[in-house]
Image (tube, rainbow, N blue to C red; front, side, top):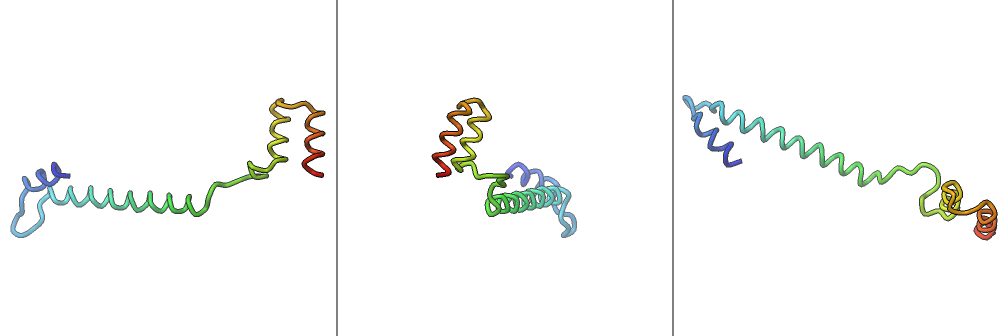
Length: 88
């Protein structure tokens, strides 16, 4: 930012008008400001909205059991026994 101010001062003021250097500094400041505002809104929407979950929650025991069967971690017999215990 200091470099931008030094560059802006080199262009100087002309009859009370803002010089070209200050226009560059203002444009960069405006882009930075609106970029931060947009990123803040995106962050806020994601935090308030939370993660989108499709189907069962990841902590659901039956969903974990189904996933383990699909991945081949347990056999069908083990799956049926554990499902019977979980469902009562």
